[in-house]
Every structure is written in structure tokens, then in C-alpha cells.
Image (cartoon, rainbow, N blue to C red; front, side, top):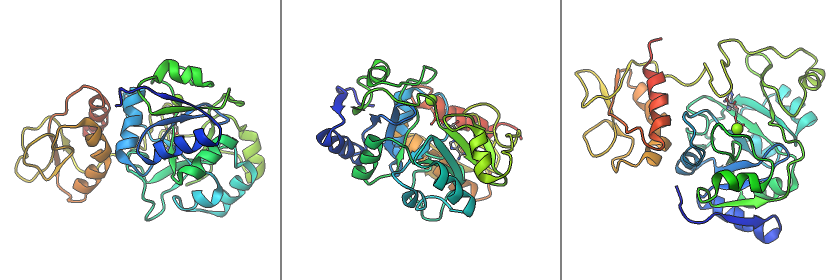
Length: 313
Ligand code: AMP
Ligand code: MG
């Protein structure tokens, strides 16, 4: 986490190109969208995405929404369908997020989707957000730009009240017009409303010509608490000093292991590697022993995810 001062950028050409180069350099930039101010990070950069959780003080890794400037860009990251096209034609740019299967070769950090095989993606309807996304030439992961558990920010002043000194910059473009989070819809296996938001469900049903299903325990339990969160098939044993016979070992800090979340003991690096390494060890088909991870900073979210992976199923 950066302790230097957060830049307050005006949303003119200079400010937008400064914000874009900060994003490209791996820094966090809060920016105006029509819904609320988003806390943006280059979605391909695992360390930058880890910083989002650190800056917000999020106690768990729930997947983030990726923002792109147009429908063509979205198709680089997700598997597109006729239904997706209908929704995009009707509501993009706008306050609607689509959840679709990740596309092969997407290049996004696994922390963005919290290890899920699907991605939440949106084209915002805001000239500054669009200009920033084009200038950065990067998919931008962005949850609301507020400390975890606090109210979503609709002005740059709100953002600075919560995150000053913890992020690279805020791109100020006045108050947000919608002031509500985006509606989230998943299309597989059937069109389902995951979160109510800026676009009314009825409008989406009118376009699809069918009612939206409501989430079951299979899709979502509480906001940000997906039951479908990635869990390894293998048995997971926590706070292990070393691997028992037949186990693979996920290390942390200087130690012998099959994969090491961070040999330097850096929690940001560990967070960025977490889902990718769990997937890789899971592919071995062996039970996974995990070294102790400190509870400080991002360690809380890492341990939250690990303890869910280790919980009896
Ligand atoms: P926020 O970024 O704070 O607006 O929250 C993003 C919301 O999108 C959370 O409620 C997440 O659980 C949800 N979300 C993000 N990615 C996915 C996904 N792949 N599947 C289902 N829900 C998702
Ligand atoms: Mg939020």
C-alpha cells in the first residue's frame, strides 16, 4: 500500500492521461462512473488487484467487476452469446453488469474473479470513465471506492475521506448521476438476477422475453458471499508446518514447498498468487497442506478464503 499522497486529478485531457498512466503502472485510481466512484486497478495485474483489497480493507476476496469501454472489448474476456448481445445492445453502455464464462486466453489475474470460471463485466455510461478506459488500454477491475463496510462514494470528496493516502489518484468528475450500483445478471444456466441495481429487472425481462430467475443457494447466499466461490476439490489442511506424506505443500515465507505464495513473506504478492496456486495444486489430485499466513493486512482475506476452502463439504 502506498503511503504517499493521493493525487487529486481534474477530468480534463491531462488528468485523464495521467490517471491512465498510473493505472498502466500498477497504481490504483478512483474514477467517476454513472453508478458510484470505482476504485480501479489494471485487471491483468495481480499485485494491483491485491492492492484494491488492501486499500479497501476488505475482509474477503469477493470477485470484482471489470470495466471496459465497449462491447467489442468485452468479447476479448468472456464467451459471448446471442443473449449477451441482446442485453448489450439494449443496456450498454449502462448500469448493468453481465456475468459470463471467462474466455480462453483472457489474460486477467485470477484474483479478479476470486478463482471463479466466470467474469462480471460492464461498459459504463460515463464520458470520463470511457475516456480513461480507452487511454489506459486496459481492462479495469473496480469495486466501489470506499473502505469496506462504508457507504459507496458518489463524489471525489467521499473517496478522499475514506482512501486518501492509500491510492494513487482520484479522477474527479463531479457527482455520479445514478448513485446506485449496477444491476448484475448472469446468463448461465438461465438468466438470473444476482443483484438489483441501476437498471430495473423488468426492463431486462422485456428485452429477454422471459422472467429473470432468482438466485438459489447454488448461485449466491448474501451480497459478496457467493456459494459458488471457487473451492478446491482436494482436502485442504491449514497452519501446516510441513506436508504430510502424500500431501502437496503451499508455502509462505522462506521454506521448502511445492508452490510458495510469497517467499519474501509479502502478503500482497501472496494474495495475487492465491487462486492460481490453489488451482494448480488442486490439479495434482493430492490433499493440500498450507503454511500459516499472518492475520495482518491482506492476511485476513487470505485466511478467510483458505478457511472456506478447508471447511468440510
Ligand atoms: P462491487 O464490485 O463491490 O460492486 O461488487 C461486485 C459484485 O459482483 C459482488 O456482489 C460480487 O459477488 C458480484 N460478482 C462479481 N463477479 C461475479 C461472478 N463471476 N459471478 C457472480 N457474481 C459476481
Ligand atoms: Mg461496494
